[in-house]
Length: 365
Image (spheres, rainbow, N blue to C red):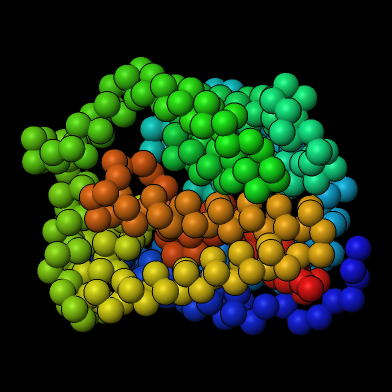
């Protein structure tokens, strides 16, 4: 392994900090009215987001300066710990219910979301497993079945909360790692068909998911129910035009768009900053993904390459789904916009992941 460490990828670092800065500003802009109404403090969400952004930057600095193969040694312990937390969060009285899902561990308004950490733990473990047994990945039973069983178990525990959005992101990033490791397309195509059937089953098994699909196809059939969020999001995006209504001038944040600081924060960006603001955010994400994939290609070993692919895939999948929901291309899923949406666990984890990516870039060929 090449161990001559250089400076981290400046493009990744600067694009991350730029997106994070935009996110902190937009969380305040999107939540100020809601914060004052609920807590009597317009800065309530801003202060918490700034705290977790600072905590995440510290975590990013730590992982950026920690040799990435350290995580290879801790992969098994990390995965087992996350499985234990996923079981623990399902116990009534231990797990905290928020937004209809028992996804949190914590006290009062402070808590962690174990499913967020499972995404990173699964990516690290699969990168380790497949880098050590890459020659067997083309064989279904010996190479592909073990990681699929692990992923299926984790997905099942996450769905018991239930949290379909996080489960989809974890599965998508994990399958990308498996594909890059050399899995056969025939096997993956067969799995895709099985997964599609299972996905349809999950939708039919829960009335609220079926309602979201129906609302996606025609949100105006139920404008005050299942289609409400989609319609209000489009009402925010549409008036933004080229340059937007101006920072802080959103109308939809006045209790029209539910929780505008989380899943639908891009709606507020489009409304206040317009097409130019929205495209700027997308360009920053494209730079992050581009340099992240370059890091994966030039990584000095297979583990580093697969780990970088998994992290970049996790970011890209979340961005695509979140913005797709905002503009009406996908049904509402509850997936946040990385580095931008309000949320302690997701923000801290994302900056931790980017720190690992930056460390891999320090060893790139």
